[in-house]
Image 1 (cartoon, rainbow, N blue to C red):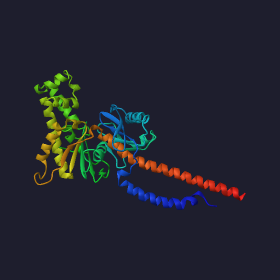
Image 2: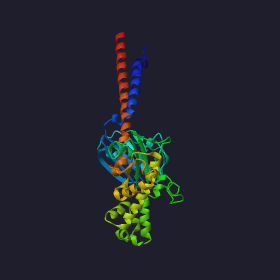
Image 3: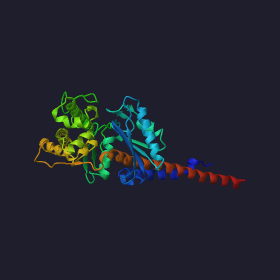
Image 4: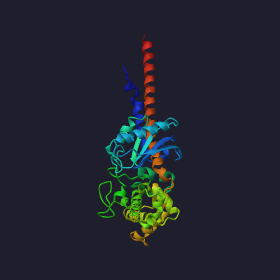
Length: 383
């Protein structure tokens, strides 16, 4: 008597070969991903942002909340993510979820190995969330997600070699070559913020001293402003008056706003941050030689107040200056939403695999039904 395995083997074998061929071809291009809405989550040191994004990078709806206290368990952050996804799913047909995490994500894009500004240590984030949500989940570093978004929809379109630098609570980074994010052997490539630029310098949350992000990030900007205000420096009178003497109320966006209004100290602080940014970019150019640096993250909202000094410092520090082509330094076009948009777009590739697997299950069930029906007819005829 023939079995279901015998009945399906020739068709299944031929189809498996076709699937392997098609799958290899599809993985070469993001253009083959299904044009379905997905949710992107951007998790930073201070905020969690979630949004539904369509296949063209348009944000259909966005939610934002503060990052739970990092002293709490990782489950608290996971609970926040689940709540945001379920809230969005009430109003949108969500096919996958992409997580852009501010930390080191392993090569399998499952575990957050280390997050300097969160309490994640070797945390199996993808598996935990996939077990709680009814859709596939993808996890990647937030800067990798932002770089992908800028290459797909923003300032990096048309670039073959791009380096993304995200300035927020700290500094994130990503490398994109020929349409592929370079994650490195262990998944932690692009952590430029923790390059040591000042031996024995300021202590960094990562445990080392003198990291680049201690001199060119949102934390560095706020730290310098608060120190001057706390010392009652004459140059800080403008911002002291603005916060009514409450030094702890000084924030990065406030410094940028005052700089735009002409406050001399705030302008100088942004120039200092920008100069350190240019020094780091020059070092990266010597190592990676990209055609374009895209500057994103919340601090990039300062625009030319920050990027102008960075370009000047880059030209002064660049190895072989005057005898080599210089990379462009541009501000990200997608702003602070880049990480969210990129995570959602990367998740669309997972949605493709999920939909393909679901289609295979349906086809197997249909073949089984045909076989069962044929067996029933055969049994009926034998009677």
